Length: 129
Image (cartoon, rainbow, N blue to C red; front, side):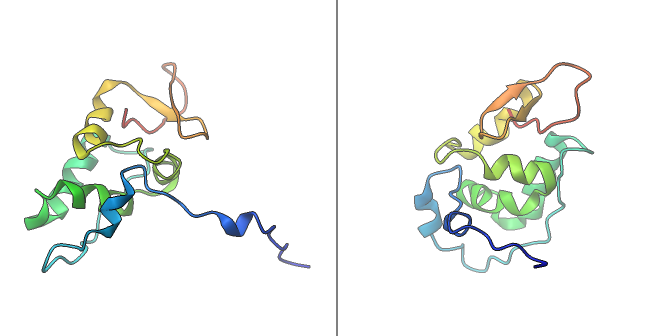
């Protein structure tokens, strides 16, 4: 058989956002159309530059911090996307909390949603902590 059947556990996975789930109940702002975000994969470019480009892309809605949290995932790809989607529910308390993580020190996701420091010379990693 070309495609292996997935176990029933594989189909039960329902991703939870790392921010408070009540934000998902809020409607999008009137007139909001999702922009085409520049994708960040953590291998090239700086996280700080990416965050600034992300905010700029939101245009007149850039001041809506809840919208920033909801839309941020759409600007990530590859390892950065995996890192963000493996954070525990409630790990991100606010937009400021997420954005400030980039300046603390370089870290990497360890597969559990926890962040670990890395030694200089290790492979590049997400640096939102």
